[in-house]
Length: 494
Figure 1 (cartoon, rainbow, N blue to C red):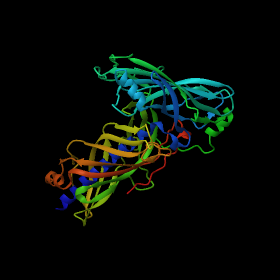
Figure 2 (figure 1 turned 60 degrees about the horizontal axis):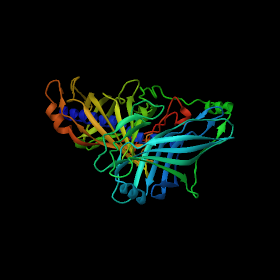
Figure 3 (figure 1 turned 120 degrees about the horizontal axis):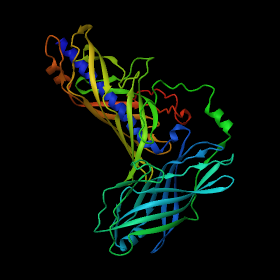
Figure 4 (figure 1 turned 30 degrees about the horizontal axis):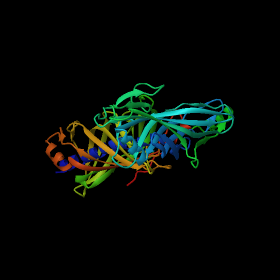
């Protein structure tokens, strides 16, 4: 019986760490949603400005609201460039405009949105921010329609040692109309100017326009800011090159942990890292395990290819990232040794190792049309579990070197928050909690003198094992001043 108890704990603990590993992955995933929001870093600044426009439709002048989201650097350098990122342009067509399009025979609409932006230094320069909707949208029978488009902005060269002020100006909508007889075709990617053809942050999708029964298949609408609208997007202070260099080279350079950011980048992602810790329980043992080594050892890192791709679909910003565990150069959680009370009174101690078998897939879905911009993030990965060195009530138990769950373990973790400024709940840049449930597979190859597989499977294996992980703030080693470096070790949330 003591042998069975020892095996039970080993599997339980095993499952616990597996859950932790995936949760770690999930943790990263949830954060991904904040790719367009670097406000938590203290360097980059994300703005969202909603302003009114007067737009010239064939039926007359219509008033509509446009929301402009973008991230600006907190400071620029004279002679350098300012590159706005995370551009999302959202236009709200009022009910009267939607009705006018339907009267022209249109059933669907897609758009290319062009925003003129003025950058004021000693002189004023104008640039165009352009974005396209990902798919053709059905025109509602009544009510308004939101057209959201991810876009890109041209960089602005800093020509003077004074604050650069960015202001929104005119807006143009190139609407493509589809008739009721023509349904929207599957999205076909086409790269924006200056980008690759891959469906990344600058990718656009054209939709089948069909031919309207009346009226043209396209419509250009020009808009000017309403007289009472505030048009200033951001004011970026400018430092001299020498002053900025001093700012970028602090007296005490932050000590970035070894292995931080060691991940292969895809497209335009950013290499960052953070610490991950937390708890995973074993439902059948009524207990939870802390998934980090004893101090002063540090928990595992998660390296992230941050926001390598994003698209707009159905008024949602969908962002993709990838993650990998790193503990002393290996894709795994730290080996953990812990004690449970089997059956509530028998102390069982075992060592557990969880190894990541494939990169963590991170998908974040964020609202973009109205605050608080809710985010839901999911992360999925597959791990292998190994248990060893089992001791039951102080007596070593020979479970054999190959005791393990049958096959691998797959886990999906979910995190939620609001993409406000500052963010609430979980975001990738600021960290926070993620939760998930893990199914422990049946066990095999357990026991040296007897077959313990049925006992372990019956007492440990099954669904519903809960995980609660905590991720710390992220550090970007290539730009430590733009992130939280060194990455802090989070306190595991109970």
